[in-house]
Length: 430
Image (tube, rainbow, N blue to C red):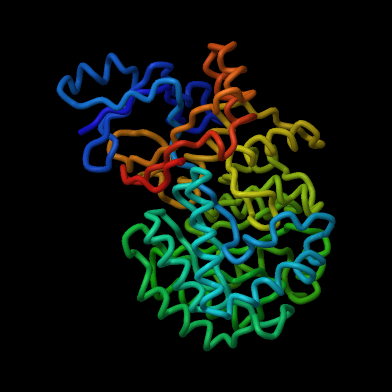
C-alpha cells in the first residue's frame, strides 16, 4: 500500500450527461495496493483510512488517469508532419511507401520501439493501435509493448486491393496469419487483439468475410477500421459496393459492427448510420487533429451526442499531429468552436474524452479510465516546467475547472514526469 499525494482530477461518469461527473481534489491522495486503486479523494480523508501507509508527496504536480488513445497507426511514426495533402493523396505520397518498409524485420523493430516510447512519454497507457500489414512487424509491436508495460490492443492490417501490391494479402493468408498472431498475443499480459480491415476501400468481400470469421471464432476480439473520413473515400466505397446503402452497411453485411468495434473518424456520417452505430453499441474514434490536417472536415459531435453514439479521442498518428492526447482534447474544443452546429466543450468533457471515454469505447471501463476503487492504477503525473507559461498561469488560478483547462491547453510531453500502468513505472522523465 502507498499513498500518492498531489492534486488529482478524474471523471467518475460521463460529463456530457451529468454536471457532477468530474472529481477534483486540490490536495488529494491516490491509495494504491498491488497495482490497484484502493481509494481516491481528499488527502485527509484517504489518510484516515490508511494511517500507516507510506506517502509519496508529489504536491506541486497533478495526477490524471492514464490517457486512452482509440486510434493511431504504429507504422506511421515517421510520416508525422506531412502537411498539405488530402487523405488519399497523403496515403499514396507518404504513408503507404513507409508502411511497405516494415517488411524489413529490423526496421519494424526500430519503429515499434520508437512508437511505444512515444506513447509512454506522452502519458498514453492504453491504446487501440492500427498495426502493420506484415506479421513480423506485428510481433515486433507486441513484444515492444509488452516490454514497455503498456496496455496495447492491435492487429494485422488486412487489405487485398487499392494499395501497393506488397501491402496486399489473399483472404486465406490474412486469416491464417491473423489466427497465429491471436494465438501468440491475444490476452497475453496487457495485450489484446483487434481484427483490422484497413477500410472498405482496400478490402474485397472475401476479405471482409475472413474478418467476420475471425470475430465469430474468437469472442473477445476487438474490431477497428475507418469509416466516413473523407468525401472522396465515401464516394469510392459507394462505387466499389453498389449494393450498399451507405458506408456502414458494408461492415454490417459482414457483422463487423458490434460492442467491441471502433470506427475511426465518421466525419461524413449520415443520420441513419449514427442511429445504427448506437444500436450496435459500436464506438467512434474522434481524431480532430487529423481531421483538420488532412482537410477531412469537422466532426459532427452534436449529432453523435444526440444519437447516443459512444465516441472518444484518437491521435491518428501519423495523419494527426503527434502523440499528445491533451493536444487532441484541445483541438476537439477548438474545432467545435467553429463547427456549424457547435458544442462548447468544458474541461471535464475534454478530460473524459481523453481517458474514461476511451476505456468505455474499448470495453475496458471496469479496468481503467478513472481512479475508481478496484481499477488498475494507471496514472500520469504532470508538473509544469520551471519558468513555463503553464507554471505562471497555475500560480494565478485556484478554480479546479480553470486549472484543468490550463493543463489541457498548455501541458505537453515536457510536463509529464511519471507514467504508471497497474502501479508499474512505464515512463520517468530524466
